[in-house]
Amino acid sequence: MTALVPVDQIERMALAVAKSGLFGVKTPDQAMALMLIAQAEGLHPAIAARDYHVINGRPALRADAMLARFQAAGGKVEWGEYTDIKVVGKFSHPSGGSVEIAWTVKMAQDAGLTRNPTWKSYPRQMLRSRCISEGIRTVFPGVLVGTYTPEEVGDMEPREPVRMRDMGTVDEVAPPAPPAPPEPPEGLIDVDELLESIELASTLEGLEMLRADMRRVPKGADRDRIIAAAKRRAEEIRAEQAPAPEAEGGAL
Image 1 (spheres, rainbow, N blue to C red):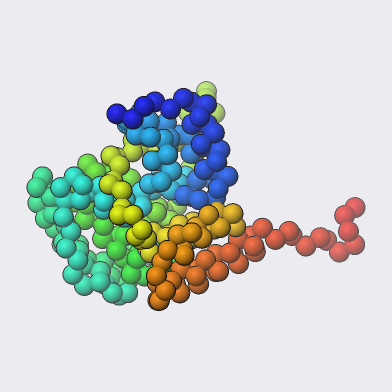
Image 2: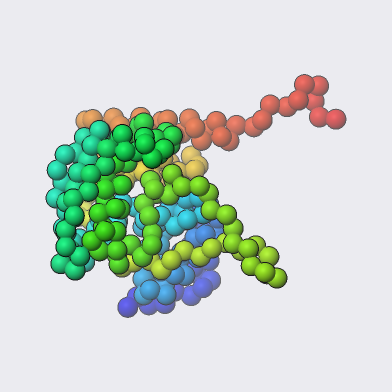
């Protein structure tokens, strides 16, 4: 059991996470809610920031973290076809049997998912995330506790705030965090996870914090993809932060 972290320290961590622009957590309140739930589950509060994003007001568990927790709980996955057009995975668990899940770009198009621009840039990664979520949810749903991947949440409509009679408007609280996955081997970088973090960075400072991980990616096609994604995201952030042009003639 992890030692309890005082609430004032959690508040400082929540402020730092929100200020970093990483993980998709936009406000200290969102970070605080996830961290308190992690602590209630016996985990260090920082686990919530590491494993979750908050997208459209919903907590989202990264596909790699979801798969790691599934495997740590005794699950197995065998990948079949793995292309930008189709991804197939066979998921199995002693408590839930096995199932083969296939996702294709046509299925995503028919479901209206490809309006999200990330589908055009990284179709294979998006298909893989869909396979992971559906496969694990089918054979061993206890690992997910009602959570979805960032790719799934990004395709959902923004969550409306909950209305409580005589209490005004409050935000919904994220579901309890599942057990933490094992740490990855030292020195290895998950390219898909790094691309996901780049896409979700909301500030230039947040992108800068990822620079060390970018340098750990070996030179080659993966490094080129990472650099291109970081440059594109930096341009988008600069455009978002650019001041609006002043009205002709100046302010009255």
